Image 1 (cartoon, helix red, strand yellow):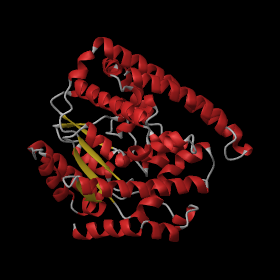
Image 2 (cartoon, one colour):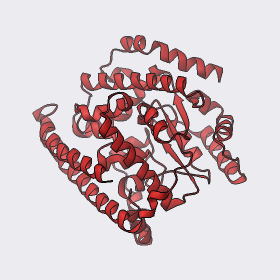
Image 3 (spheres, one colour):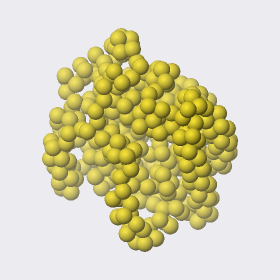
Image 4 (spheres, one colour):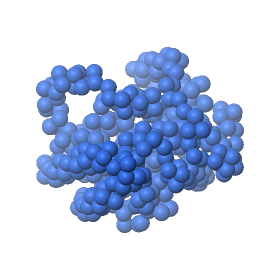
Length: 382
């Protein structure tokens, strides 16, 4: 954890400098709003990281045995964004042999110490939690249609990498920083020393989670941003199982841009800059390429087309459980049947239009043509 702390300190000093750099970003007319948002966001994030590192220090003193936990055959759900990864994750998370980080653990209690503290005072926070749960800010209402947020929901564990600035979402605050964009070209572009530090830190986060929830269980992760981390994950966890969700690129790209827009609007204005949109296009092109290469080198990786997930959830999950060596227990059978019933009633509230963005869709269609055709073919076969 020592090298992780050194990395965190350097990165957060950078963030302070970036905050000053981006105050005039997008024009001076929006400076008061942007200054207010940075004044709220950056100190809050910094305070959280200070608390987390105190928790990590306490872990090394009081719970050092977490380092002896064996991370046995973890399950990684990745793929392109907006391709059903969240749905697949939440369905699999019902299995008793699997355990995932919840939103509250990723954001507020990544250390073992913090989790025990939160759990010990949890009964005092329940009335407040019910009160807070009734408050719906406009931003959260907008996000619910895109990605349902809940403190107790299984969530993308790259949020637990915030203490070492390894979470790509920070790019919405600082959209032109090369060190953040290297996170989406992790295997290819990340400097070796930083890559090794991030992977060791991530392994420690999983060990802490298993120490708290049960070392006999298997860890379940969902993170589309890990599409460019696949080779590093395989190297760090040689016995891991991978389920990679895909979707035709012409549907993935506008949906991904739309999902990022609410965060962008909080800081920078109503529309993306053309440069930011082009970076997202390049990012997704890299994800498709990385998935293709990984599957070619790892034929046991399970590819899950989104259409297959939505039209045959039972068959998809049954096959995944078999391939991952997980039993279809009576308890999980009941949970899966409930999810199938819920999926039949579900209608997405996420609405977007391609015309809302600056992307030249004819160029995108040509750039993604091969991978869109591949995804479509796999859906038709399924």
